[in-house]
Amino acid sequence: MMKLYDLSNSPCAARLRIQIRLKNLPVAMDEPPFALCSSEFLEAFPPGKLPLLLLDDDSTIAESTVIMDYSRGDVSRARSSAYCCDRLCS
Ligand SMILES: N[C@@H](CCC(=O)N[C@@H](CS)C(=O)NCC(=O)O)C(=O)O
Image (cartoon, rainbow, N blue to C red; front, side, top):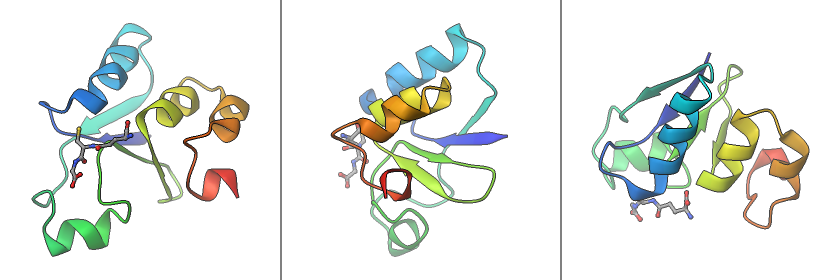
């Protein structure tokens, strides 16, 4: 199952939490196991920002709007987003 890493007080991830609950998407939600900005966090979460979507193959997708498109199954829209900045777009 995909997992969304975010913080409960993160405004960037609020829209994702709403979408996941309203649409009952199969996405688990969790807080990162390391403090934001710590070296462990930066190593494990390369963009250094949340939210981050962890996929079943252990790759990740960053940027809340891209994650919104991807997690509801609109992969082509996620790929074409101006904010798409990871392996999804390469
Ligand atoms: N454009 C990004 C913004 C992500 C972002 O700035 N997230 C904040 C939390 S709301 C963050 O991780 N801040 C930590 C930092 O900038 O070091 C998105 O919408 O996902």
